[in-house]
Length: 457
Image (cartoon, rainbow, N blue to C red; front, side, top):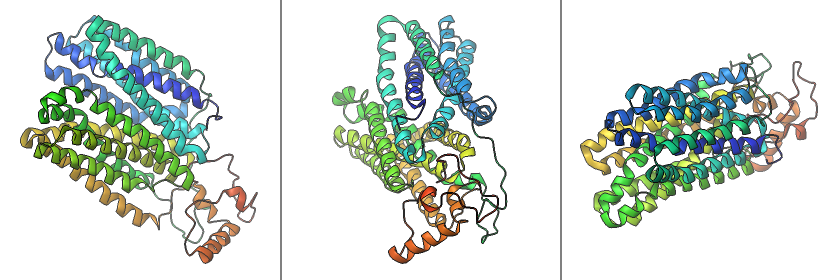
């Protein structure tokens, strides 16, 4: 993993970019309120930022194909932090919202490019661990810079935070220059050799393949929207004495657990050769965590149970993040990894925003325990969808230009599978490398020798 060219540069660049993002995330709304602005304007800064993020994520795969990863990463790092200097001009509605929108463009392009780039640089056999390590660098950056921004703003003023955020973003842009100059693979049209001859079935549309992993991320990120918005206040409500201490640390605990378990899920996926083994257990772990939070608030139990619930939810959340992303990479061909990254990020960001809004309405009507109970119900729906997808997936043929589908065309591959079935009674859970089955098959006209490990193996 570490020998992949440009991988370390990507990790450092993404950590710096998320450091700039984390510095400003809690500071900008607070600065608006301190300057006399309304709570609506303070919330609108984040809302406009996320809206620009999602819109940019839709068009980023096209930019990665036409321009390349290197220019897009440099541009996104620059746009994420440098426009923040504009906040120094003032906290009037127009400049604040314009600057937030510009920064959202940078964040949207960055989040799509970084996940897809890791899939381009790292061989498939290390992709789970590499994706988990990316989560570790992002998580550590957020855990460090979220409280640092507030501390600097409280002691020296918010202008210093804006300048520091711009400087760190420039560091990220410089590191992006060390990324190999590659472009996302162009889209490929299916041919009659891209799926098994015996099926005679057209390739499955991409949206059907990524729908359930996307919904798994969205349903659990909706609950994360409630956790990030209401859990600190709920901690203080349960125990005003200890809650004042834990309210500022509990989100860091959630992020830390997500970081560790995301990497763990990647290691497990690499060892098995296929993702998905921990998806449903991870969703169940997150469901348990949100359930503990809801019951603790409702019953008025010890605040330590809220800490436990946050840790359980964070662990499940981190595992689902990695499993969903790897599942999308696994199901789609290499030419579609940028779309997979875009869908994953849109699902994550949209779910967080929708969860904050709709579960906030539930909290207004049924208090905090009602919001977390509703979040648990949403996660339960996600578990049902994932279970149904797993049953259907036993008979699914992934999209064209997929290595697993190509293996079925090779006679020796089919004989190998039949042998494994006869000996073990089931298909091996770990894919057999192409090179171990046939060095250069010629039985099927039109067969193309893969140049490297590709998602879909």
